[in-house]
Amino acid sequence: MEDLQSLCDAFRGCHAVFHTSSFIDPHGISGYSEQKVFLETEVARTVMEACAKAAYIKRCVFTSSLLASIWRNENIDGIIDDSCWSSEEFCRENKLWLALGKTKAEKVAWMKAKELKVNLVTVCPGLLMAPTFPNSHIQTSIPYLKGGQMMLQQGCLAIAEVEKVAKAHVSVYEGMNYGASGRYLCFDGVVRRQQEAIELEKGLKMTGFLLGERHVVLSEEDEEEIPIKISNSKLAALLNKINQRLPCKT
Image (cartoon, rainbow, N blue to C red):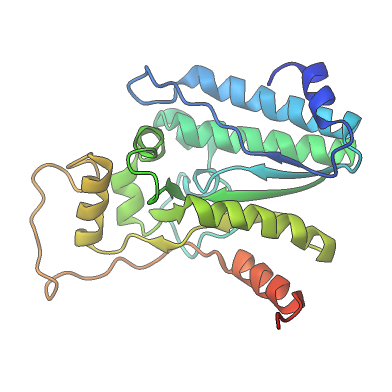
């Protein structure tokens, strides 16, 4: 992925490039180390350069992460949408390496796209889940959920089914013919209740990761839903626009 010529050979003649790769260290405690931040950023740079040099049509759909939007120095005030960026300083101070890597890589991609005149859109999914492949997502969830308790409390712990995320990538690519541009936050739902968090912990085999080991179990009557603080309305509007353009099946 760091070899420009290798990527140029792969991209030559392509009408579009889908850059979906990420870097996970399966042997690391957190799954994603500080060193991976530099690697992911440099690879994003190389991919955009190869796209500009070799692709038949300079068009790229880049997979980022919701983590590139939700981490800020101050408390969340208002709704997080595609215009929001995570603070690199905050991520570094709190050792949120995956968030930092995704933020820096996406920013570099946008910088190079502007410089090299590549038509770029980015998809920023929430925590990826794969219901049809049990346990396949557990390892990748560890680095994403660093800071998970704060995400839960602030109403921005969002879940995204991997198949729907894949379809969203295709839809965004198709939507580029109709003016799709910029960033698209992508998720199916937001964890808002204690029981939902408990079920997520059990599914990931990470008991206590989100609620703590000594949390008090509340009844449904006593528990209040956490307000949602993120919006995927831009992607929803695009999908609706694309569906309206599809021919009716008979």
